[in-house]
Length: 123
Image (cartoon, rainbow, N blue to C red; front, side, top):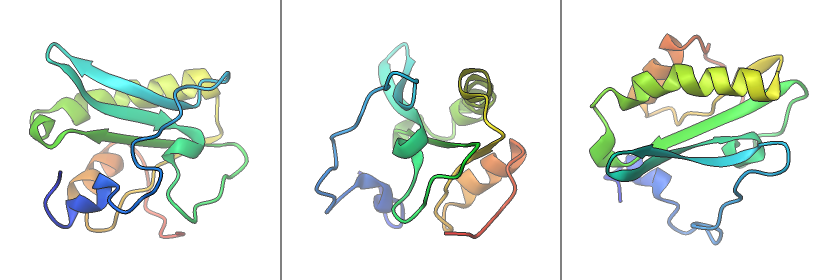
């Protein structure tokens, strides 16, 4: 469990917390991030990557990710991001990729910016 404000990502109070769709027949859904110790996080695409209130957009592939807190600050996300974006482009061939990041999560905002995302406060 994360410390505030990152406990926002824990899913507390979410009736569906812990129940996720693995990949559908098109490849949308969740994929584990694994290192030599086991599962340390996830990446997801499509509806599973959208936040409440965020609507699908034609030609857009939504991308989400999360790492266990003890896996942070080790360069994993920085190394993983280009692989995730390359996979999304090859697998889904979208016009654009979109990631929703909580406004207080400055680290993830910087990571997305360094990966080429631009800020849009639409949701």
